[in-house]
Length: 267
Image 1 (cartoon, rainbow, N blue to C red):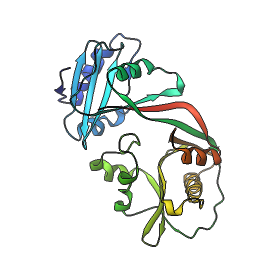
Image 2: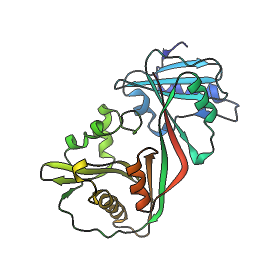
Image 3: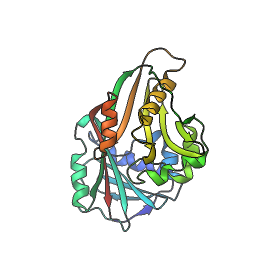
């Protein structure tokens, strides 16, 4: 496969249009057109490769090469790149529309690195809170927020690029629980008009089994319902192997949906 630089968003849009023109079906794992500039063009220049009815883009950022694809047919031949590549694929509502593409990538040497299912609780209502011995903050020092890069998986936990984090951080709401100068737990979440999605939830090992995770999730719901009537839908992506998180979200009444995302890696 021959890889060349993508010069502009205009060039990218033209290539996608050429691949998809007059075709009824499109395999793709790119879902962020509203932020395509930041996604692909604010770091190193992305690379592209064309093969028959397929277009591949490699986004190079913070030592991680992320693969995006657009294809109207299952590609022929083997996918090749000279460095490690990460590919995240979203399956909506369990329709298995991407299974052929996943099979192709695995035949090209990709391995399944992680699998997350979406969990949901519809119509969350205002929650009662109890007094806790930790200090609550919703405006932590950004250096505390940067700890997500030491705690979560840079390949599969949807972490933003480090050089974009300061800007990304402004768009999220957060809950931090502090024990004097020590961070005991935190929760980042993305609040919309009628829904809220957990981004990153963490409790220090020394503070677990004390109900702090449930407290933060309740506080999140209450924050979202502040100054508005009605209920709110609550979503979370959970690694299928994270038994603690599965237990926690089952305990608070969330249910696993058929929607999932798979992270594949070529090494």
